[in-house]
Image 1 (cartoon, rainbow, N blue to C red):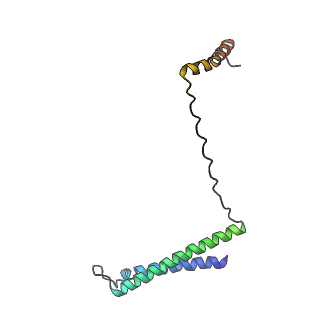
Image 2: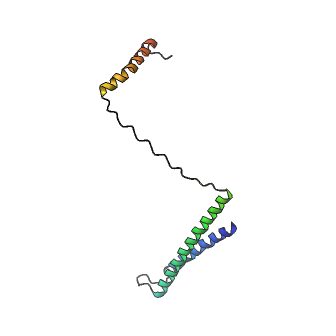
Image 3: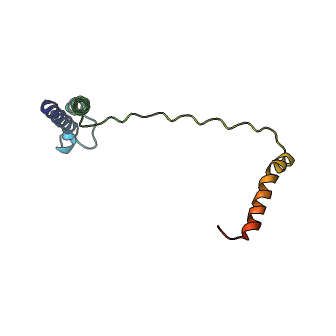
Length: 124
C-alpha cells in the first residue's frame, strides 16, 4: 500500500514537472511574446507535454491500484447498480363506455349515500 501511494505521489510530481516544462519558456522570458516559437521552446513544450501526459496516466493507474487494494482489504465497499425493473405496461382500455361505467359504479355510490345518511355526517 505504501509503495502504491509513493508511486502516485511520484506520478503527480512528474506531471507537475511536465507542466513546468511547458510554461517555463514563457514564464522565464526566453520566448519573446510576439515572435514565433523557437526550436528550444518547441522542444521544451513537447517534452513537458509528454512528461505531463505520462505522469497523469501513472497517477490514474496508481489511484486505481490504491482503490483496488482498499476494496480487497474491505475498507471500501463497492456499490453495484441494481437495474430498475421496467414498469409494467398499462392495461389496454377495454372500450367501456361512460354508461357502462356509471352502471358499474352505481352500487358504490348508493352504499356511500346510505352510510352518510345513517351517520348524519358525523364520524364514528
